[in-house]
Amino acid sequence: MNYDYLLQQLIKNALAEDIGDGDHSTLSCIDKDAKGKATLKIKEDGLLAGLSVAEKIFRFMQPDIIFTAFKKDGDSMKYGETAFDLEAKVHTILQTERLVLNTMQRMSGIATLTKTYVDKLKGYNTKLLDTRKTTPNFRLMEKEAVRIGGGVNHRFGLYDMIMLKDNHIDYCGGIEKAIEKAFLYAQTVKPGLKIEVETRSIDDVKRVMAVGKINRIMLDNFTPELIKQALKIIDKQYETEASGGINLQNIEAYAATGVDFISSGAVIHQARSLDLSLKAVTL
Image (cartoon, rainbow, N blue to C red; front, side):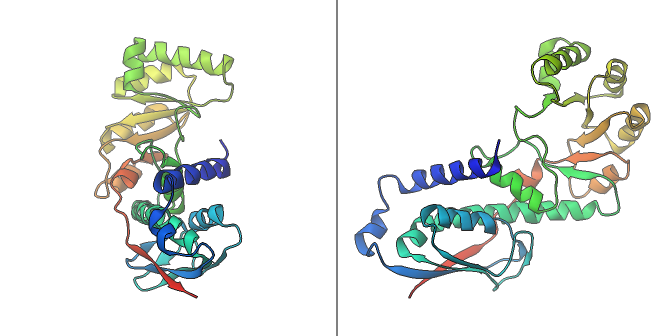
């Protein structure tokens, strides 16, 4: 699906959720034509993310705003710095303020944590993937924050890749049967759809290799030693992904095995929002 379209829908729905039948605090005391200026102040060190989204939120409400950016997404940020200045109607500023802050604070926290993980992978060929462990209706922004932080987006949803996980395999009646059915489905229903299969043991890896017909093998909850064994069996015939129990303390040990990808849900669901503040002044 188109990113710009999805973003516009997200903004529309988020503003509708917040404003409802009217921003009565603003409507009650601010003239509808009053103009103002707002400045985004950085109150915590980290990696900036969501600035381009912030501009789109403001322009959704008022296309003719004056938006002056002093930084860009992916820049490091320090306490006391200014990210952008905005000139717009006061109603626009007050009605979008919380959505902008919530979005940028959350995205900056995810981007910062992602970069911490990615920095651990320097010198290795392994890439960091995100997962679908995201906040409902905010996945678009969370995955964008991972990208800004240097990670790689895994599948966006259930529709853009076949991933045969443990429950699929168990419900289907076995790993071979699940692969054969998925391969036939991909060939007949959606050609080009990639197939990834989760393995839980070295025996599973051997069984997958005997069938083939997939694109990537996930090595779930394998130790680095077991991953090395699995990689010898796979022999670079398919992409490989390590998942489960991987954190900042052991991620280098997994990368050192030579696995292609390491997936981490933690870069999103364990991220802490960073502190930002939108200060408004009248003109």
